[in-house]
Length: 167
Image 1 (cartoon, rainbow, N blue to C red):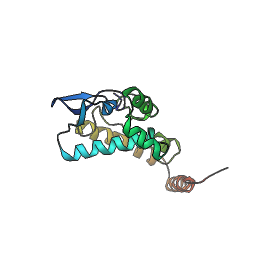
Image 2 (image 1 turned 135 degrees about the vertical axis):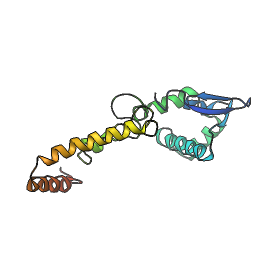
Image 3 (image 1 turned 180 degrees about the vertical axis):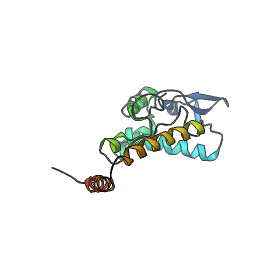
Image 4 (image 1 turned 135 degrees about the horizontal axis):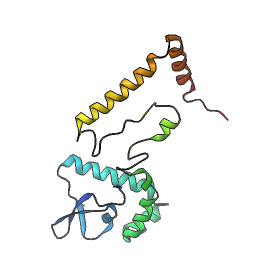
C-alpha cells in the first residue's frame, strides 16, 4: 500500500456519492472534497495534500500559479509529480515505511527503529507491547555485558560524534 499511488482516501463526489480513490483524484472535476468522518481528519488530509504538493509540485513562479489555477494538472501529471516521492509513502512492506527515517539510524543518531504491527500500534496493542518489551530486554542483555567504564565510554563517544561534520 502506497499513499501516493493506491486508492485509500474517501472523496465526496459532485454526484453526492462518496468513493475511495487514489490521491491524484484531487484534480478530477467530479471530486468536490475529502469525505472523512471527523473535522480533524478532514483538516489533516488538507495539510497532508498541501505539504505533498508543496514538495513535489511547487509552481516555479507567480505566473505558474495562475496558469495552474486556470488549467489544473491532469491526473497523469499529478501522478508523475507524486511518483518523485513515492518511495517515502509505503505503509506496508520492507525497508523504510511512511514516517520512518532510516538516515537517523544509518547515521548513528538512533539505535533502532521499532516496527509496528500491520495497521499500526493502536490496532494490536498487545503485539506492540510484546515487541517493545523484547527489544528492551535484548538491549539490556547487551548493556549488562559491558562494565560501567566501557558503557560510559561508548555513550560519550556516541554523543560526541553526533553532529560532527568531517570534510
